[in-house]
Image (cartoon, rainbow, N blue to C red; front, top):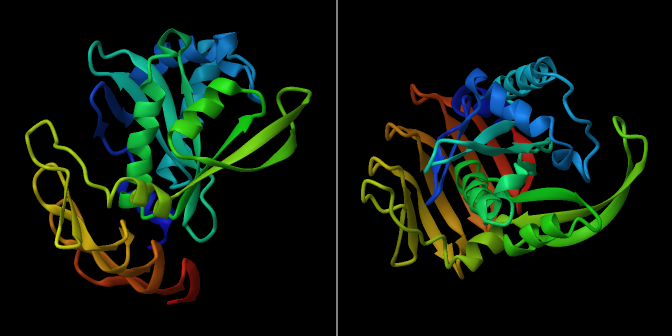
Amino acid sequence: MDLRQHIAEHCFPAPDIRTERLHLRGLTRADLPALYGMRSDPRMVDHTDQTVDASISDTEAYLDRMLAGHAGGKWIVWGIESIADGRLLGSASLWNFNAEGTCAEFGYGLIPDAWGRGYMQEALSALLGFAFVDLALEAVEAYTESGHERSIRLLTKLGFQRTGSIDEPGSAVPRVFAMDVFRASAAAWKKARGGMKGGTYKNGQIVSRLKDGVFTYFFQTGIVKASGPLKDGVMDGEWIFNRDDGRLWQTGGFREGQKDGAWIRYDREGNVEYDETFVLGKIVKKR
């Protein structure tokens, strides 16, 4: 099973993720009024190659495209909901996956009333954990218009590094966008977190544990999600990954935080779905 198939089968609707103030969850048709409010606000399309939605029908067509693409494994899109009042504050996505399934791009937007409160940093921080642990991606990229200081500050706080810039002609907006390219690597993210040590879920279950050089990441139920050795704060050695019911999902090796050696993924009946071989993050064999 490749990453796109995995997303279609196991990440649609979007997996629920809760932070201190936010509930990241799949978008539904009940979100149409809130989405229309967001997408009809001119402030939401500044610095983007987008135009405002003229009617709720435009928003409905957008939501249909998002849900269809998500169901087909092209991306994962979350609504960002306030736990305090249930209000939809924005959305975030992992999309534009590379052919190897090792890198994705962030998309994100937040209603102006919620700007300046750290909500998007809180949301994207949680999604980086999902990208690097649950999806085992090696990097996440983000593109933002040069001079968009609020977005640049956000990415910098999250540990992204600027890697270059591109000029991108608009398709919906008739101008050329000067875009800065930012990248966060799984290796740096894990090292900065001392091997991904975490807190607790709301039910008191610990999120992760580092003991004797072995890192273990748990589901909220206490079932082991992933486990394996760390070296200097990054994955290094043989790891196992389980499904939320405790059944084995995949096994594979890491070297210096990158996939290395044999990687085998299993279906829910325990049959091998595919077998890949990596050398420092690059696929050299697949069967």
